[in-house]
Length: 301
Image 1 (spheres, rainbow, N blue to C red):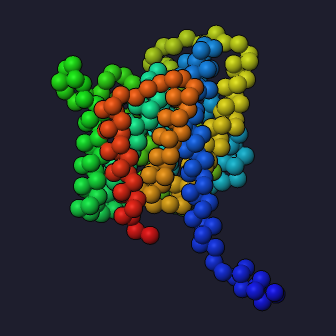
Image 2 (tube, rainbow, N blue to C red; image 1 turned 30 degrees about the vertical axis):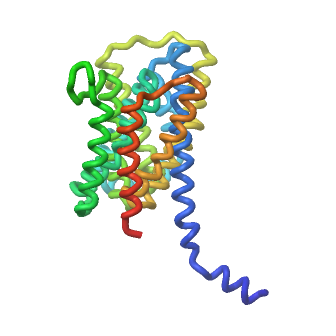
């Protein structure tokens, strides 16, 4: 029994090394998939999407200050890349919040999850990862799905249907960019990259509020407490989970695992808001998801 025990403990835990990042990504995808609901409830109480983004990210930054204090020396390693990561993640989170508050949740998520397409292109441009013929074919499938979703029958053109579609597409692109940068910044710890993303959310939301000249919201103390709790607990756990998983997995694989958010978003939107998706949107979304799934099936182990 002793020999067996020693042999078991000495074996490399490759399975655990895979399970932990995947579990973290699934947790993050689930929480992001239902985030739209508390955001809409708080908006009904008078907190607009920009003010919500500013508050929850500011609270998350305060929670993360002790971690940043212990690792502040890491900020000197790649300051410009960290700044780009902060701005990319901040723009991603801000546009995502605005899109899911005002738009159809499933449509927003489907357009957002063109991110595997952007990841492949950015991985080639930033990380030097080769785009194979197979990957190029899958990119074409994903783009075909996007065009089907963006088809405007009345105008007869492929074009985003207003502000929400543009926000969703921009959020997906900046999400892909942030994932590639997270992967590139291997020498920077997860807490530092996470706090940088929260700081970026504060910066982007503050600048957006400044240029849009939105007044201070008139909200109850209860709504403000809920917003603070969402930042201190929800945003903190969600971002840490995604950062942990993305840091420890190839970007193409992590982007596809995060597609689970689509399932959570579709179920929660149908159950809690009674939202429906048109046939052509499901068809286009299915092509996007299929391309993402096949890309991970063909990824190197």
